Length: 288
Length: 297
Image (cartoon, rainbow over all chains, first blue to last red; front, side):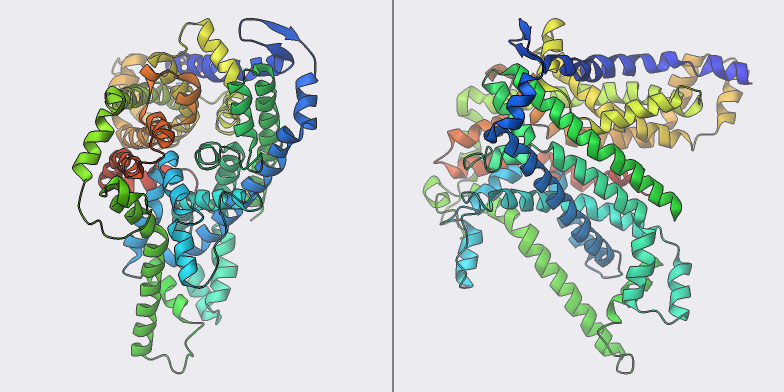
C-alpha cells in the first residue's frame, strides 16, 4: 500500500497553494531583506548598507515605535488573558444569562476595526464624549483620552481589548469545558473550595487554551495597525506610533527603503519574541 | 455536566456552609446574574446603542454626540445620503468587497483543502519544513513595499486578482491547518477502497474527499468572509485608488469627509456592520467552533 499511497498523495496537490504562498508572501518577505538595505524608488535602487536601520534606530520619531509596540502588545495581550480567563470561568457556569452575555462579548470580534475605532473615537471625545459625561456625572473629571500623550496609547489599547476579549473568552470557555468532571469531584471529596478549584484545576488544565490566547493576542498586538490608525494616526505627536504605523507613514512619504527596513525590524521583533514564546509554551504544556 | 458543578462553586466562598439555604443560594444567583447582565449592557451594549441611535438623528442633533432619544427620525434620509455620496462610491465599494471576499473564499477552499489533505495523508522528511512554512505564515508580518513591487512586476498591482491573491496567500496557513486537522477524522481505508475500485487520485480528492470536508469548508467560508470583508490594511496598500475602494476604505475616507456630519458617519458604520451581524445570527456556533479550532486539545 505504501507505494500506492506515495503515488496517490502526490505533492502536486500542494503546488497551487505553494505557488500563491511563495509569490505573494514568501518572495516579498525574502526580497524585503535586500530592499531594506537600499535607497529605493520601486523602479530604481541604490545599495546603502545598513543606513536605513541606523536611521530607524536613531531617529526619535521612528524608534519610539519599539517602545510603543511592546507596551501595546504586552498591555493588550495581558488584559485579554486575565479578563478572558475570568469571563471564561464566569461563562462556563450554569447561569441562565450565559448565552446572552457570551454573544454580547463575542460580537465585537466580528465587527470591522475601523467601525469600532470610529465609534470609540466619538465616545472618547474630551468634552462631549459619553464616557466623560458619565464620569462627570460621577464627579470625576475625565481625561482627554486620545489627546493626552500620556494616556492615548492606553486608551487605544483598551478599545483593542474591548474588541478582542470575546475571542479570548470563547477560547477559555472551550478549554474549561474540556476539563473532565472527575477532577472537580475528587477535589470536592478532599474538601476543596472554589478558589482551590480555580487554582489547582482550572488554571493548570486550561493551559493549552491560555497558551493559544497568549500567542494569538501577543502576535496580534505586535502587528497591530488598523485601530491606532483610525483613532490617533500615531498622534498626538508620535506618542502612539507603532512600528506598523511608522511603516505606513514612511511608505506614504515615498521612503520605500526605510519603510521596508521598518518591515524587517518588525519581522525580526515578532520572530524573536513569537517563535521562542511558542516553543516555550509548548514545552510547558508537555511537562504537565 | 460541567456547567452544574462550576455554577455551584461560584456560590461557595461567599455563603457560609451552615447558612447555605436554598433561598440564599437563589438570591445569590440572581444577584450574580443581574450584575453580569448590567455590566455587559453597560460595557458592550452602550457603544452599540450609541451608534444606532445617532444614525437615526439629523446632523444637528448628532453633533451633540449624546445618547438622547432623537426628536425626529432620519435613518432613511441618512442612508440615502450615504449611498449617493461621491457618485455612489459605497455601491462600488460594496461590489468590490463582495467580489474580493467571494473569490478569496473559493480559492482558499480549493487550494487549502488540497494542501491540507496531502499534508495530513503523506508524512515524509519534508513535513517539518512544510509545518515551519505554515507557522511562519501565521507569525511573520507581510512585507509591504516588496509585495507592491512583486505585484507591479507581474502587472497585478491595483487589480482585483492582485488583492484576491494576496488575501488568499495570507489566509492559506490557517485554512490549511483547519483542513489538515479535519482530515484525521476521515479514515484512510476509505481512500484505499476507492483506489481499489479504480478511482484516480484526482477523482479521489474531488469526488470523495472534498465533499466529506464540507464541515470545515463551512467554517472556512465564515472565517474568510469575516477576515477579508473587514480587512483594511491590505486593500489600503495593494488596492488603492478611488475606483478600487472597498467598504472599509470607504468608511475610513468618510471619516474625514463627514467630520461635521456625524449622523452620516454613524449610518455608514451601521450599514457596514450589517453583514457581520447577519453572519453572526446565522452562524454563531460555527464561528466560535472555527475560531477556537485546534486551540484546545
